[in-house]
Image 1 (cartoon, one colour):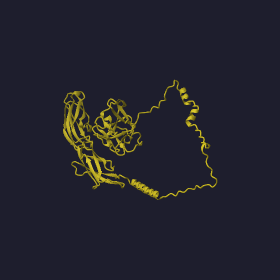
Image 2 (cartoon, one colour; image 1 turned 60 degrees about the vertical axis):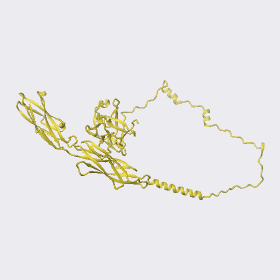
Image 3 (spheres, helix red, strand yellow; image 1 turned 120 degrees about the vertical axis):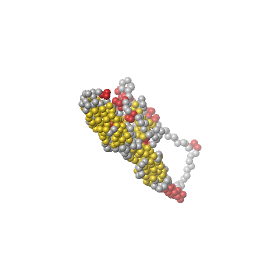
Image 4 (cartoon, rainbow, N blue to C red; image 1 turned 90 degrees about the horizontal axis):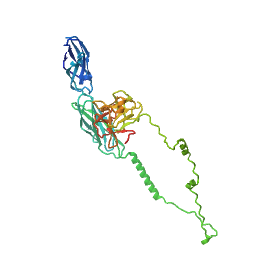
Length: 461
């Protein structure tokens, strides 16, 4: 058997196609059937047609290998080796792999988001900038804040991040007003954050609003002024008012009699105290305890306790973020297909069924959990392989019950010092992050930010 690729190397841009020709010659002395298969990193987006050749001795045939990298982070820029396995049916031990190389062109796609768009604080406030790299090569993004004159100071930490293809980077924004508003209601300060990608002259601008309430609201000062005025008026009235007191008693004319003195004056008899309610209760005979008699009749032997009704079905929990107003973790639109994103919703709703309720399966041997959405039994929360995207995938009920799941489908629930709970992927060690949108939650390197803190309902403290 003789094989060759023509050409052995080619170049293709994401979203386009390129083709190479595979030549196969039967150098044996019998009719042979050859099965063709693409192997290597490009196998997911390459195909060979036809995938089977039947050749007589000395005959030669060709097949076309089509390379079509998608415009996604899965097809990373740069040279990618691939091969075509040629396996004879009659002599599979003589199989051969023809090797080639395809160079995938780079493309850049960046998505930025300010979380949240409106922040509040009397003395300072916090926000986050998320950068999603949807391209196929690593990028570097730098951040700079632009405030409105001297009214607001905006600082980003860190000042720049490097984001791998298919991943997300974050920066914390610290906003501090130029002056404290003691009285005067609420003030709004617009601000802008610029995200500049290396090699691109024009930055992406994100606009937000910093709402600064006064330390003392206007109604507090109004109430205080009214109270002071009332107090002053009361004091003035008190000191100016002079009460005119006069008695109307008069001496009755007639003969005056002297009251008896000594033994002639007898003390009035003291009234006999009436019995108290407790004494009356003691005098009244106690009625027989009918309930106890009935209970003793209905329960021979004098024992037994009535058991509470057992709850039906597994216990479900809601999972709520501590970021902003507290978004609830949910399966997007209540779908149950593999790859459905797990996002967040600011409201607790049953519009799509129980897609905001979760069943937690505990595996004591590893102190880990799987998170099963109540609306889609047989699926679990999954960190998509080689990405930080949260989704659901199907798993067998036996594996969910026993814990025979891969690391990207098992999670640690770790208590933080502030009482919140981290949801940590066992496979990557990254924490689940609330992105404050209904598209997708993601995982990222664990820290103490609020977007990585969760509250699980009916969960032991």
